[in-house]
Length: 614
Image 1 (cartoon, rainbow, N blue to C red):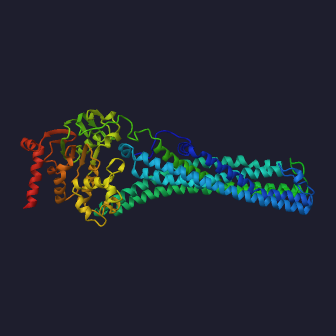
Image 2: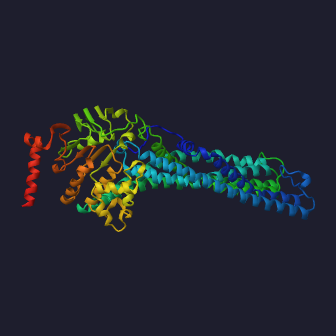
Image 3: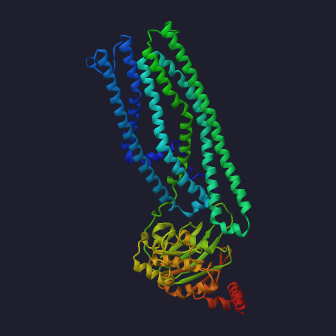
């Protein structure tokens, strides 16, 4: 199995996701970014204004504020002090207003974007061909839909805003420094190439580690999901220690990847602090000498205390963003790795909607298998080999054979879960390769051997089999009646509104089976597929299902896969599969009289039943 959901390389996965899911609200994002940037720029203005005021009051310097006409600046010291105070108050109020607008717009944009991403990702995944899940671990898919989307949530809710804060703070501080003294501002800027080089190196080291973290987390989730799903088997086989070992090893691999990422981050932050600290010492030394002795080295002109103090403040304000560069880069790389996986799911070229192809309608269709052969991807052994079947409209066909004979695979091809490697499958005269899978499945009622039920009410579970999950109360009750479920449902605490819990574990196996059959027939399908529908129920439950089987299959083309031959005894035709090859066909009586493998199996099962009766 592979962890990559798409073979297509995308060097800018975050940008691709924004284009796909956030394009409609880009104006909102722009407002958020501009509001945040302007609010941060204005939040740094107070120190600049104080510096200008100090020089104007104590150093006979003009209060020269860019874009502000000199005629508006009072000359009297007290008036000037009030004027500067008023400017600081106004900029503070505007700063808080713009900050509120920016945060609100960021939050609104992020939640809309993530809502579209979540819903579209899930809607695509549930329409993937089942072959996708043969190639990818379910835990990795769950990790992408949950953990990776949450990582993107954190990125857009926190890191994007933090990145804008860091970038705007750096740029704003540099602009204010340049307004105070261009030469010192340019000297500070000389630290940028050193910081850029070190952080670029760390960035390149972090990216593959973030990919490993996502992969290891997906593998751990896959093991956890498998273990919890098979907890009864683990306990029955006293395999707790073995499973604990597998989880421990996977968790250790995940932890090692996280620790490696942490080690890089720990090395990166002190290096950034060292570079910033060295430049701060240089600026203080140059500034003090400039004021007390004169311009050192290649500097020229004058420097006042009203310029140096704010300049040092702005240099100090540049320190946190520079120190946090490592965390921002690490967060970006994590989000990029998450975006690769989520983007891989949403950008797959495989049949995802079941909409491609011809949309057809059937009326108890005939079904033909013409020389059908099939091999599962990644294996060499044919599961079906040259299968030929011709099923009449409205007929009931039983498919029997030993475990691994290819019975369920035959149904998978009929339901278009896979395409045959050779041959054709036709339903109602239509080649399924030309038919939209959704068009076919909307006319099929399907019952699997596990009788899977959703976490919801009885009514919701039965109605799920109707087109778009919509069925009236009368239709739900009628389907339950046909399946022999109505009587026990009415005895439940809340009848059809009873909550069944996860996988319907509050019901017996036979009850779950009958509800699954009710779900299959509620939409009045033209083609009915029962895959080991009574394999996990007791004899009494099977008898109840058998009593209603004639009503269930009436006027429908029906395929019944069964190990218990009593289930298919009254089928119009029985097909015997052996290692993917059709070895016998006929009615029950014909096959018993023929004395072949079906007759042998029937005699064994009848003998077992008679022995049990004795």
